[in-house]
Length: 319
Image (tube, rainbow, N blue to C red; front, side):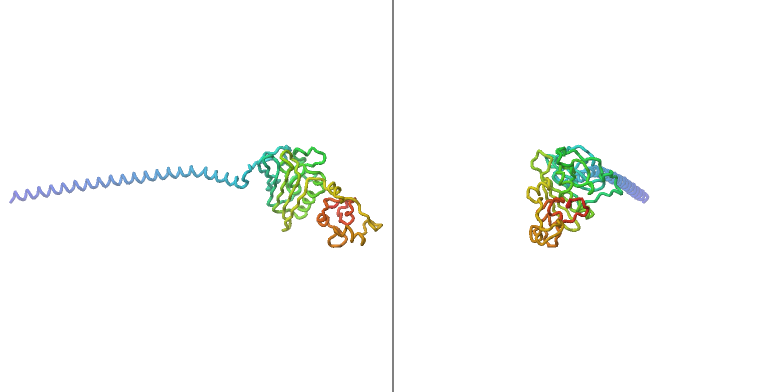
């Protein structure tokens, strides 16, 4: 009996020892697994951080590339360059676009492959303000204009595409050699005066054409702009309007049955005047004269002058 009890005690002791060993092994296994899990998590975080840094380094040039692309799309086919507004050099770069607006104005001039200014645009024309902007005593932003090839001719002016008074600068991208009378008293001057009187313009576009690719002297101009909601289109050649009128026989004096040259007679009304004076009131407006084919300006020697309103009394109308 005593011997059996000893065997039983030995048997139970063995079972207990084996059981403890399994528990320790299991704990060790669990710990190892936990450590591996921690390492796995840490490795994942490191990899994620590296990936984030890689993505960041790739994103930066993408943003710069997008900005460049937007600029290219703004003026496709042209390179946007900066030129000082008072640069007197007559040189122009080919296939470029230049801001020719003074101060914060945004007026853009475009050149073709021959360096000729072919187009000028502006969403809004803002008049010069001599109260807040530095101008010379003659009312200009700069004392001189760019010396574009051709302006050395005695009959050509350094003509602004967008005048000083309308906020334009004086570099070569806003200057073309323009016939002096046209620039000072003709359609160019008439257009500028109309915009000034309206307080500005919107949707402005100038298209300049040339007789060939070798010259910087335009052959004609076409201006399209909006004044007080009305779309205006002015097209004229780069010529002396007085000579054109003379060649058309429109500058000679017409005979009058009245001893007073300023008196309208029935003979005049029923004759040549009636073809110009469309409303028959005995007075001729600039628009009526232009619609009849007369080039502006008209001087006091012109037969129509006596029927027109020379408000400043300088002997010229339509300047």
